[in-house]
Length: 390
Image (cartoon, rainbow, N blue to C red; front, side, top):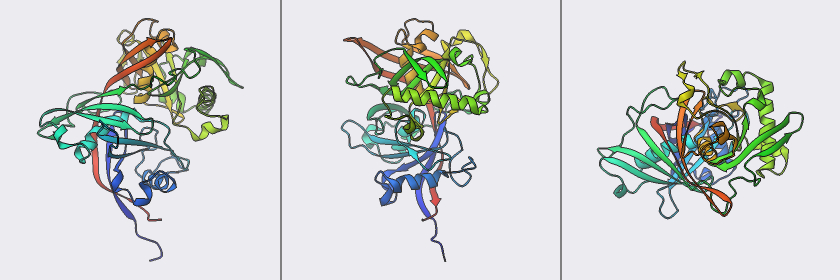
């Protein structure tokens, strides 16, 4: 035989929130991939089916969108008072790199159930019936997340009647809490301003709120871009000129936030920061044909992930939205009516999402203590994933 046979690796294919990805226990990976580096990245790229110049990921587990080109590595936590260490890799579809710069808030909802089902949580912490509180250490951003996973007869309960816009079928509700998403010694607003003037050469000048909460995010007004804030995916993703403009704004925002030192570095940091645009509440038809009443929401938000308009909302961006909405004077707060908010309901392309945030203003600085939201998760397949042994 001129070529080596394929290698097989234990893996679980899971949906978490409005994303899905391939989950691994760290100990199940080949020894060379148990440490960060080229071997690990190469393995995950091949598992997902990247880079694919056709943009389909036909020869891998990816779904050819930013929401479905994802990988997760989990292990028992080395941190005190935590159950599991969670490492997230956003796999590029058409380029040979894995972005480790941020978290995936949606897949976080599946981390707890995977950890319980795969022996990463102490059995003494798992009730026979009720909620198992799984303490997650998010290793990409060094933050604590708490997932409240429903348990029935000692097993993870994945079925239920909780409906999450952007997911077709109901499932069990998983409450997720992002604890201290911004440390006290971190700058929530990296520029020191709640609103900045952002100059983007050959594109224009924009008012922008640039915040680091959940994931670094750049918010601009929909009107300044010529949009209403109620656009669906095709209106943006089918327009190459619009996508190029968004990427330039994102790149120059990243530079101003201090996330990169040179504008060219943005191309290799596609996962962070995110860029989103906001507008006042408005009625619109979602991608599934449902009508969202303007009176049922506080504002509309559209966000891009990995260069394309997201079909719903990234969980980490939802953290940024809730945090910014709770702080007077941000573009998000102004779009939501320029009022005091402890929770916000916003409209996205697939429907609506409610997120709560507890913020504090102390010593002339804003901090956020906790952001909470409800998601759902489900195991789609469990077994072995095969890749060529090269």
